[in-house]
Length: 359
Ligand SMILES: [Zn+2]
Ligand SMILES: [Zn+2]
Image (cartoon, rainbow, N blue to C red):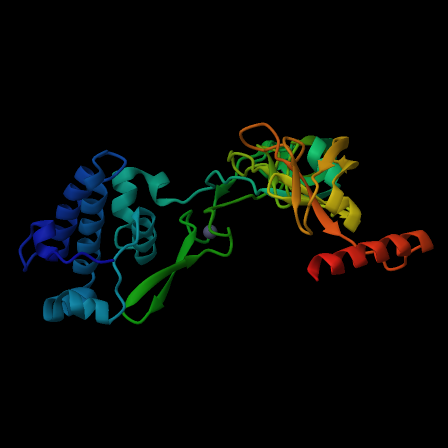
C-alpha cells in the first residue's frame, strides 16, 4: 500500500530539494516517528509514509517518474511502498541508500535481522481409544521424538557455546539486493539463511543447529467424554524454541473406535434392542446394557417399532458443563421367521380374532 499524499509535502521540502536536504528531512521525521521511540499508533503510519517518500525522492529514476506521472506512474511500474516496518529496513538496507543513515540513527542492530527468537513447532500424535476409554477417560504415556535445545552449546550452535558472528555475505542484514527493472528488491541471504549471523566453528553435538533430537516419555490424560477428533493440549511439550524462543505445544488427537453395541450421538448413547410383537403389544420389563453396567427398563404396552426409551444420565460424560448425556434404547419389533407349533396355534387364534373384529 502506498500513500496518496504528496511526497514533498510529507517531507516538508521544496520540489527542487537536493538528496542531502531530503535525507536530512527524512532523518528528522524518522527520529520523531520511529516506532521504537514514539508509542503513538499513528507514528507507524507517519514513519512508513516518510520512508516511502524518502525512498522515492532519493532515487533519481523513481523521482523522475514521480515528478512526471505522480503516484500512478510509480504504481504502474510495480512500486508498492512498504508493507510494514520490517519491509522498510529490508528495502533500505538492500538499496544501500539508507543503510548508513539507519546505522547512524538506530545502531546497527536495528538494521540487522539477527537470530530472532523463534517459537518451537507444535507436535501432534494420534491416539486410538476404545468407546469405553472415551467414556471413562484414560491415563497414558507417549514416546515423543522432538528437537530440544542442545545442552552442549546451550542453543548457540557454536563450539563451546561460542556466539554466532555477523554474516560476511550480507553484512548481517540477512538480505542481499537483486535488481528488477528500476527497482532493487531484497532477497534472503543464502549464506546465513536470512538470520544475518553464521557460526564459524559449529557445535559438534548439534552441527550448529542449536537443537538436537531427543526421545522422551510424556504422560497425558484423556478426559472422560472425549469424542472423536478431540485434541488434548500439553503446553510447552512440543519442540524447543530457537534462539531463546518459547517451546511449541504437544497435541494428542483422539480417535474413538466403534462399539459393537453402542452408538454415540452427541453426549447421548443409543442402544438398539430387538423385541417380539408380543413384548411390544403387552409391554415388558427387560435388562439392557449401558456403558456403565446393566440397567432395568420398562417397555410400555403398545410400543412401536422405532420408539426410544430414555434412561436419564447414563450416557457420555459431558466434556463441558459436567454431568452426563442420556442412554436411549431404540426398539426394533422383530417378527419371528419360524414359529413353533404352539406359537403357530396362538398366532392363528390371534388372526381369527382380528378377522372377527374387522368383519
Ligand atoms: Zn550444540
Ligand atoms: Zn547473510
